[in-house]
Length: 317
Image (cartoon, rainbow, N blue to C red; front, top):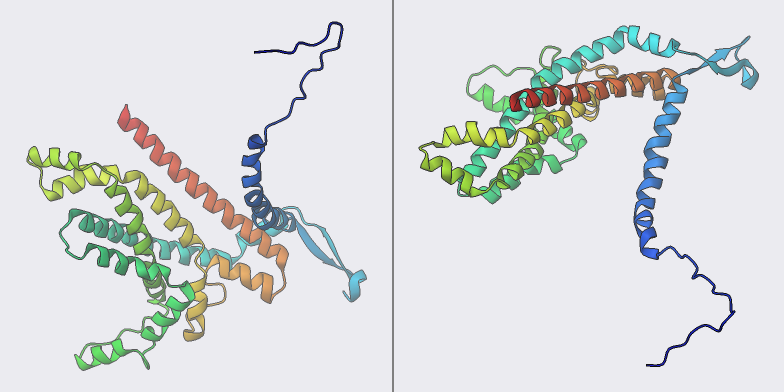
């Protein structure tokens, strides 16, 4: 085969260093997500943080743009938010709401996942769909459905109880409204958590269960000593998601508010943020309150993860 060689004395030019196009492909795929994240999440968070340190100063009669100017507020908005009795009251109600909802939701989701994984039911596919289906219903629609079931004048449940001679409780009263709101979230959230736990259980090899049965373990022992420890990471994840959703409760009490006098415009922290921002037009106080809520979520989430991680490390030791 004939080969060509460069002429003697001719300068040898190095090949231009071209970056292959495939090296730029990952950045092309990431670009839409980065743009959307920056435009609709990072930028609004930064702007809310900026507004939380600002306030409006009124001069004279406050008429026109000259009478109202935006100035630096420092930590005044945060001090007002943390000392506001309406905000503290909403935090207390959400705390009670979370104590009612989260443990019950986790227990039901785990029990249903274990039941479906045991193979005791013959309609496993239908049962999974039926349990998960309420999660697909929007929170506003679910709140409207349950709200009319709570109203004594239109609820068929009240008619059934009266026909049986049983007293019908007013679930929208000030004493029971927390449980009424928690019931809506429970009805919609159990299915999601159940699917997450059931998926984790299905990923376990069947040889593990077979070995346990050969050792004489029953269904209850297998569930408590094998299945529950295996799905512990999924339980931690669903618990954190449920805790964050509890702090962000907004749609259910807001939808039920026209049906009950027991739910105020500041019944939850996010309802107070909405009232301050869009009713009182005090976006600076609303921004400070929202930043406080976000910090509480961050501290609780990472604190719980740290606690669980330390306990797991101690058990391994």
